[in-house]
Image (cartoon, rainbow, N blue to C red; front, side, top):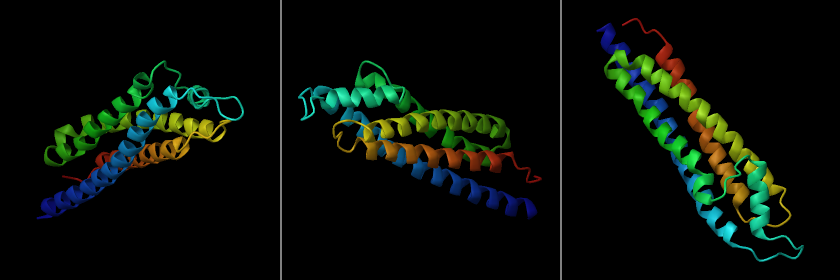
Length: 173
């Protein structure tokens, strides 16, 4: 009876962590998709603004400040999309651990790697938002979209840390 109660608590706590992580994952999806879409619009806009600087040049300057200095929009966010896909896999590992404890170490490893990748992406998105805020011309909603992607990374990272602590805890079964 005691094992069943512990198992149901572990299942509930794990499910709560996974759902919290998935909420952050969807927020990250929105921010990353919006930034990817806006990138192609900004890079194609070469018309000079009132101060002689084009939207394209301002966006490329903000992108360089964010250490995202790739040549094309598809390459610029490629690492972000890969991190996004990896996090989806990492968030579902803990559910396998609930049903079979032998997956515990692998799940913790996936979550730890996911947390590191997310922290790196969060830094890049925050730098992109600051570069967009400091730009000489209005970059539209680039800063807001970068903040949205940043928030998604932070929420996913918090969920990963929560799940790492939860899975690392010895429940005695």
